[in-house]
Length: 93
Image (cartoon, rainbow, N blue to C red):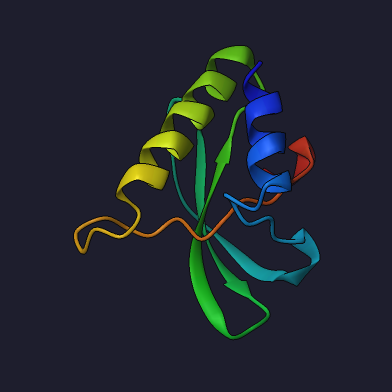
């Protein structure tokens, strides 16, 4: 199950989990077939791109594939670094 893989990755500290309460000033950037991208401030110190995913089975599979790929190439100079994940309510997307 994809969410089980993500839960285990967070629990084993392979992927960092960020509390959503530390994110402010969300600004819409764009929308794709699996979700939406926002510009967001973390603790008012850093600017991140926050990518949200639709809450359906196909999107969940894509999330896991994308996270696994990011873990493999995260230190490459030409790849945008994956800092971690957070959980938003569907109404927050």
